[in-house]
Length: 169
Image 1 (cartoon, rainbow, N blue to C red):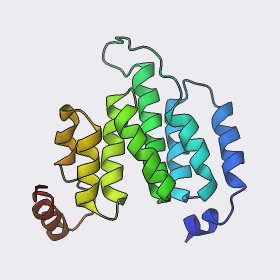
Image 2 (image 1 turned 45 degrees about the vertical axis):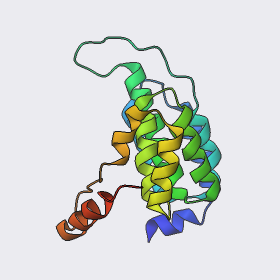
Image 3 (image 1 turned 90 degrees about the horizontal axis):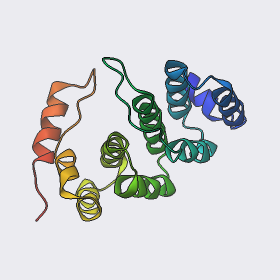
């Protein structure tokens, strides 16, 4: 109910985007949380914000020992923006996911886009065909996996696994 109330207030997106922009770059947890919150709110005018986050230039890959690198954190933020974009459920969101799947520089962001696209597309078989046509073979294995979500009923998950094993001709 609270998210529905927030969804009806499009003026929140610019305000939250400003807060997001004011956070220090290294405040990764707060930035990820804020992007996640914006996504869960499903406010229609957040699509532009998600696109700007998703296509931000990523820093170079660096080795940092056992912690995450700056690039890995930025990929997490972009992946969260992809999930938020998918939750909007617009045709334009699905088109944006197709572009991310086929062209984004980060593997993790592309994989999130694949999973999101499969989740929101009204025709799973058509979605699988689209992904297979627009991605290198190395990404096809992500099409064949069935996501499990905490709290998901086992029977529902098993039905989805069975359904997802049906391969396109």
